[in-house]
Image 1 (cartoon, rainbow, N blue to C red):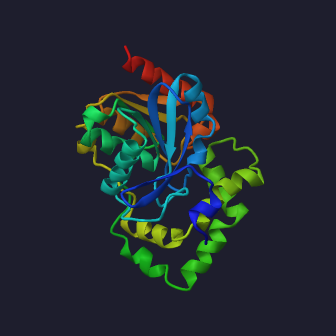
Image 2 (spheres, one colour; image 1 turned 45 degrees about the vertical axis):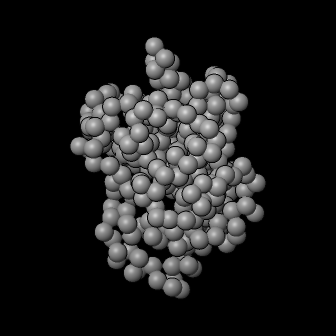
Length: 280
């Protein structure tokens, strides 16, 4: 286990006492903030980010702790994540962004749109229904006790075979062979100091999110995007979230749960189309 700064060379910014890692593309235009899902470093946006920037936007991909290379400093709740997001925007002078949240990040994006509708231009939920999942599973933490948890954690998060299997399951019907470099992009963040304990805490509390009645209160412009072959979040859940938001579900052909990696061009195109509609 190592400090994040020894595993990722930045950029970083400190907000509310937490060191946040991020990536950025583009120097002018309206801002877009990209939020990843569980166990996703901001690297997952490495193709979509430049495409949005080339279309005339300033793009920021933020590592939500305890994922990526941001400091492992909880609590891992919607309220805390929103506070970090807002502090990040203040430090980088980002105003009225379009926020794109993937999977777990969809809940954060929707929660921010609910809490600060005048400070958010629009919200895109990508491969995520924005709902809470799990929780009240204290027994999970009880099972993962020392020394077994640490040993299993290191084996699982350092195994190319296991990480590759998880990626293939999320990818959809036609996963490509994953290079060692690609697998390393997902494995390396698990080496950041404090990740094992942070994930244990998150597993016990469940994935934070909203309720469908809360989603119905979201009034900012919104878009629900989903990989047509997504088997992680069901199409029924996607349709229910779109219905709660009074919008339609837009499918990305040829993509499973990781649309931004599987179909980066189409994903970027859908996001850009949404932004153009905001401008009228």
